[in-house]
Image (cartoon, rainbow, N blue to C red; front, side, top):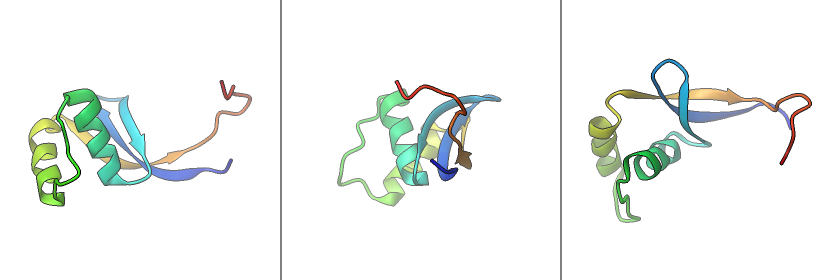
Length: 75
């Protein structure tokens, strides 16, 4: 596997809460899994951004590079 670009929601200095292929997916995953916000399929981008502005105010969503761990386990 080669390095891949993705998006991560990060809290504090190094706590990675979620990683996804797109910024929107990383934010939705964070809202659902870490803030228990029931994001539905009819939410608009604006709805997601408003929820992110409120519930993600102490977190950051940034582009990251995902690399395999050399000698790491796939289990």
